[in-house]
Image (cartoon, rainbow, N blue to C red; front, side, top):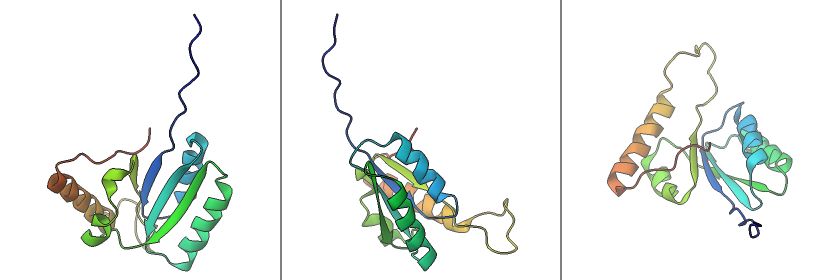
Length: 134
């Protein structure tokens, strides 16, 4: 029995909160499984390195995936509220790179605050947030 034509997969929208030295690797993995028209919105405090790195990652990602940098502090409730996080298919939170003298097992307060704020958004809205991509 022949099956009908495959249903075209829809593009995905991913929200990437934060940026660090490993973010280009995350973007590369997303690019590999991206459907044409997929997008990654990056929200980070935009220092020059972040702007440059996001631009380079966007150029490397090809036509199937676009990256857009939105400047903002992900530890501020108003930043997360204006993002409409529920409209995304996936959500990824990245910690900042380690500061000089910081150990890898030191708690990352910025990431913890971001996660608490996301939980509050989830509880306030009564809607479950999207999870990280598979």
